[in-house]
Image (cartoon, rainbow, N blue to C red):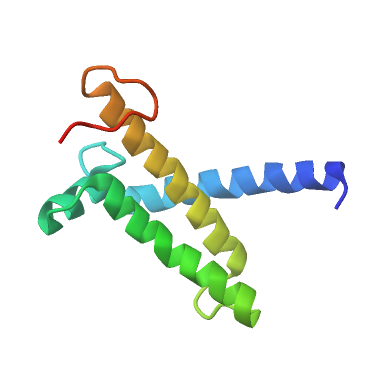
Length: 114
């Protein structure tokens, strides 16, 4: 693939992911908090929002691996699975960023004290 084609794919991908993130976000958001779904599920299961997000991400990663192994996906197109996976990575970053701003500053990559 030539660079110009990759750039076109990148632009189309970002556009599709933004549309997907905005449309699906409406289903899961309460009170204007885009991360609410992860927070509610984490509280209900005694986990953390980041771990919940990664569980949802893993579902899409598993599907992508199955596509690589078998050449097809049963429930939705592979493109959509990849877009979802990238969006969950963005949401994971949002969770990390929110945690960073909700507590005293710590160096990037530093672990939270337990």
